[in-house]
Length: 274
Ligand SMILES: NC(=O)c1ccc[n+]([C@@H]2O[C@H](COP(=O)([O-])OP(=O)(O)OC[C@H]3O[C@@H](n4cnc5c(N)ncnc54)[C@H](OP(=O)(O)O)[C@@H]3O)[C@@H](O)[C@H]2O)c1
Image (cartoon, rainbow, N blue to C red; front, side, top):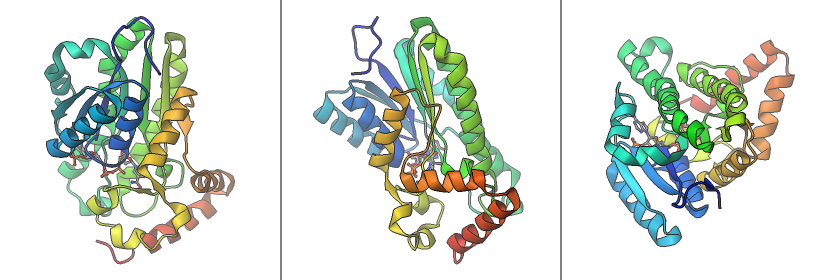
């Protein structure tokens, strides 16, 4: 069991985007390893169901805090609502996210701004707010859920998505180095195509369902692999052999080739979608 040796009670991990997909699967991994959970997302009902499951299967206590992380001040509000429990948050999973459909000029600034608040500001701010306590206790575990998209060239559509995921990868690498001496492990988890609600939310389900099976992983496999990578303090982790090969190709191919390949394939994937 992963735990802070100085603590008697189960350590507490805050997971954003815990109402579905990879976030819910990571909550199961932490609970299985002996953690209690603070679960946050906008929808309360699925988190209540998950909390019951975590109690029944692993004896974990979950605190549910419905919140919209694309709104300024949401991080502070979540921690305020957790009250005294924030004094022992030893784990943080920055996972909440979605893909904003369309090209850059097809979305108003307000949509881009909300997206950046959710994808960049919230993980950075939440980390800053919780890391002092982890440093003090000389124990912490942080996962930033990035994406394979952060390892391959940008493409048309979902313009800011890959850029935000690249940011999370670099942020995690630096944090991993800076926080090692404080007993804190940091890992960027970079899944490829994963079965979750993600492609329903960004309206690409019908297109991506044509992709071959080898390109897909379950949220459970992604979470299991990511949790293990965190325990080994891997700064950047790409789950799945197929995803690792794609990332390697993107690194080895000359930039113009990688860009052209990415452009052709993403066009194909998004063809017929909004
Ligand atoms: N699925 C993939 O193929 C894939 C691949 C690479 C990376 N990822 C990344 O993995 C992470 C999790 O995605 P997923 O695949 O598990 O998708 P998902 O099933 O759609 O889950 C996304 C989670 O984020 C939450 N969320 C979205 N907007 C939010 C907001 N404004 N405020 C608070 N919570 C919000 C959602 O909860 P509510 O709707 O209840 O708020 C949900 O719990 C994301 O960061 C995504 O970019 C996914």
